[in-house]
Length: 166
Image (cartoon, rainbow, N blue to C red; front, side, top):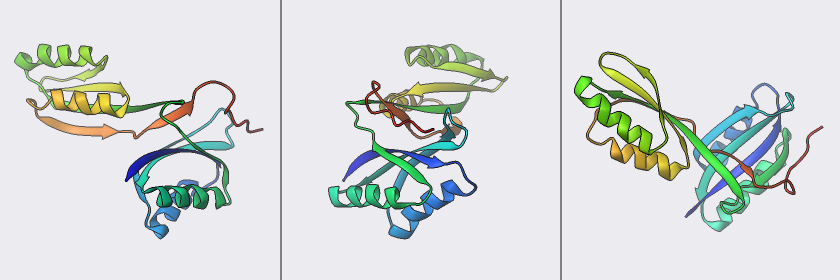
């Protein structure tokens, strides 16, 4: 089993996300993460899906997604030829005595403290999934109250693989 990142350009229509996710559900394909957002063209949405499977399954996923009527373009994001990132926000129980050590860990990972209350802190970290996982490992001594991760999003490097949507 290996992971694959798909960048899918779709027509920005109602229920487009459920349409794409429904394909995965009907076929029994796995979605490790999914993120979606409008592109520079308000009529087009980019969906980034991280999926996993053997070579045959990954090939089937790519072919089946490309056949969907709302899909404009499907591209596999090769790790060596693309830039991918994930955003995580984590709320940590933090009393006065804990704050400085949490801030130190956050700075090492180039994160940001985005909220502080008398008993908690919310930290934002952006980066590759491995960086986010390592940050969470460093927080093992603290109580995590809530956690939200966006899933991967990404683009290919350079300009030769750009798919222009009019």
